[in-house]
Length: 304
Image (cartoon, rainbow, N blue to C red; front, side):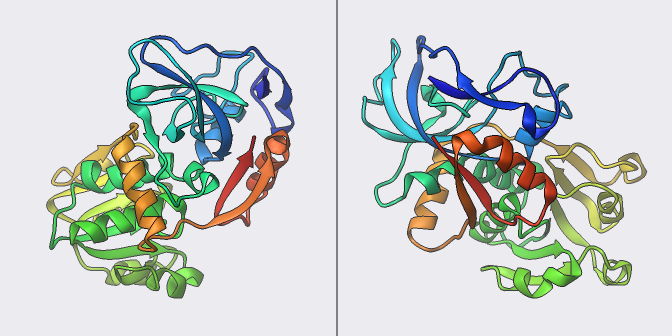
């Protein structure tokens, strides 16, 4: 098969489109003929080596987490998928024409949902959903602040909180306020790059932080006693200075039911996950370089 292969950590140019051994499904696994994958920030960190402590690459290796495609073959013990099924998953080694997925991590793409759309869903949907439910522990009627609400994970978190019945505040940059306020379910938007606006922000029940950096410590002081601060970027610095706040740093895990729920929401126009552009899998290096330059605000899809 053809795959985007990484031989050593480094810049986007280290991604080489070349021949690679076909994978074989084992017990409980499914071989997927990849149709599309989406690029996530963790992919860039895996390629550069910035994430090597959490997600090391065995060289030569194939990176990538999201996948959508068609079942080619199933391993022993797999009875709920058949060759020809359209599927999506949060997996590994997806920048390739073929990839292996655990059957327990795989979901059938709902009828009426484009395969390219499905490729954008898995990682951001489980991350956005789990940061709200598992990390921030939001409940109906509570006030939650979600940072980075216009990013793909942030949009998923906003949808999750809205569906829970929480009062949703969002934190974005000052020039993004109007766009953020227009998101379905958002009550108000706060400029995270405006210290005066942050000072005026009252206490909230919980926070789902998708941004991290220098803003996170400032936000800890805005959580009520006994409240939760959820993050997918690790605990913020100075967390120990706020002992009455429960800090929950999580790593998202696969959940096929969540992929399907968000796919159905997109299909029924209850939720929108913007796609910026689509490029051939062979242009993965260019896509990484474009993303590192900035200015891309939606998902980038690679077509295999």
